[in-house]
Amino acid sequence: MPQTAAPLRYRKLNKEIQEQIEHDRVNHINNPYKANDSGAVRRDPERDKSSLLRPAYIRDIDKILHLPLYNRYNDKTQVFSFFCNDDITRRGLHVQLVSRIARNIGRLLDLNLDLIEAIALGHDIGHTPFGHAGERYLSELLFAETGRYFNHNVHSARVLDLLYRRNISLQVLDGVLCHNGELELEEYRPFPVKDFEDFDRRSEKCYTMGREAIEKLVPCTLEGCVVRISDIIAYVGKDRQDAVTAKIIDENTPFTSNIIGSKNAEMINNLVVDIVNNSYGKDHIRMSKEAYEDLKTAKKENYEKIYRNPKANVSYDEIIKPMFKDIYYKLLENVLKNDKESLIYKHHINYIKEGMKYYTDRFDYGEEEPNQVVADYMASMTDDYFVELYKRLFPNSPYSIKYYSYFE
Image 1 (tube, rainbow, N blue to C red):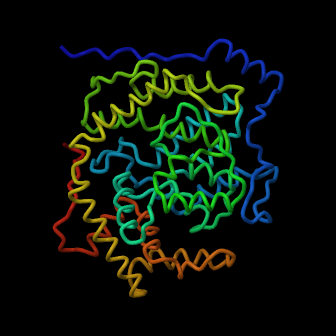
Image 2: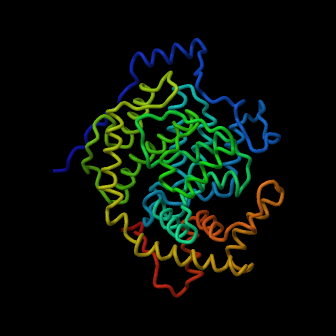
């Protein structure tokens, strides 16, 4: 006899917190800890000044939305790379979910919603194809050649700040750099960033120290802290939903989290409620200890039941990893030989240099370290582009990806 799904359990805001929020709104009492548009700092302060028509962080949102790499979100897989199924989350939907969840928390806490949206929409723009597996493979290759690590949060900031030179505000770049959605904390207390020199030092440490440096990063604004925890909220339940769609687990697979629930809708609602109950009127973002422990349990069970499931992992180490290596060294050869007819020049280097010709204050991309150029190009690829490029470069290779069909 089929099991009946347990009813969803939605928690509510504490009565006193709800009354306080309503009181503060009626009396126009603003959150003294929110980031104001007047505080936005840019590398070039003479450009992109805040105005009534286009406030500071709305400018950043527009800049991010109109980047070519924003389009590519839609063909970068989130977790499940080998399934032909239009209902499984791609990175484009993920960043929208992060933005929606974070803005909901920010609205209740009276934070700067434009700053939240800018950080959320830009936080994964430097992500590799094939999710965290692709990120890991690219980092291994870059480290073997240069002793430097690749991490998508650092590269996302590089894309926005350097490769596409959009004069993005320090507050947005810091939120992107510090978003690390793999590391949950019970409390997020903003850590100030002094200026761009301080930001650049932190970024460089991430390249040279890797995870050791990244684990110490905390955003400089409450808005950045909200995006960071919302990144986890956005994927921990949605990955379960997608795993059911992909038939990796079934909808009755047991999960043990109690306070936050076990279904996507429950988890989003209950974590948002818990964060607002424990953060309203404070200079930091926090969860209750019970919700925090539940969230850690939920992530642990996702790894056990989903991320390490053989069906979800088939093809990564056996096929995608050697494909990454083949492409990396072929592209590196092209750069070292200065092969202007190669695709890395036609599709990447020339494009970046063309966009930089209007700016002479930073660096000449033609002089960039070759391995970093290769990493920039590979990180910019969508899954489909990566596969097509591999076929073009290695037509006789034994490696090919078998996708689960729409009809299986």
